[in-house]
Length: 132
Image: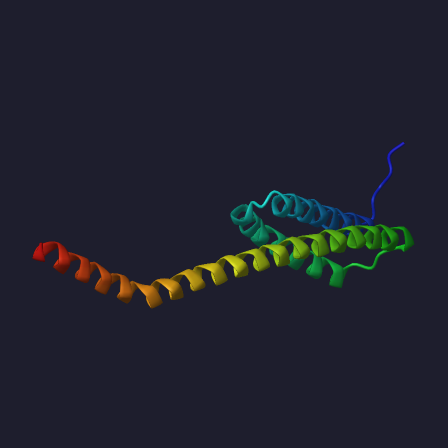
């Protein structure tokens, strides 16, 4: 016995499959963030944005039945949980980079403050050595 799929069901299936693909993408992005693979995470972002746009367009055109709405809600909840975890990783990375930049700026400032003195100390030592 063959079951036919109505156009509405096919569209609902497509929408839910796209949400599942979005979940897969954000799961991969979370793994990249946890492994501190920042360049790959940035590369993956373009695919994620494209999927979000696809979901947005499908979502506007498709009316889900009760089962579809529940599945969508479950997928969205997981997507958002992963998104929050990624954001936490990114905030931690931003803070780490901020600290590194601060250290670098302090080192630069110290170098600027003491470099002129080092130059004159070296000139004094050179003149003392030459006068011997």
